[in-house]
Image: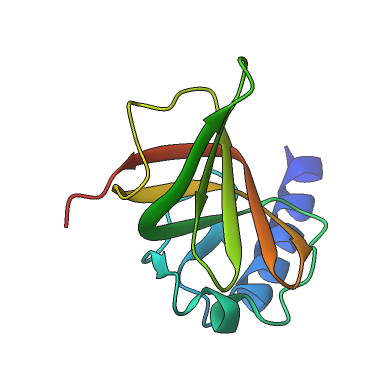
Length: 125
């Protein structure tokens, strides 16, 4: 048990530092304090880079594109920093719907974020 505790503690300490002042980000599979919006995701993710442990992002916005390759669904939102959600279900979502995307954060480049795996749900607010 002690052997597992130390690595988990180190990941938690690293996460606390990296995610400080980033309330839409959380340790993998943990709830975020709040959801980012398209107009603040660039600033909130600035300098985050590519951590060597899983972090999740929660973001709310309007879907721009909904497409499938037959196996996966690709949900795209935001204009400044494009956020792509890779998921298994469309949940009948369509462009223009307000949704919440939550998933594993992967920064592809300055202007593109991919959430994989990702869960999408209708925004209730």
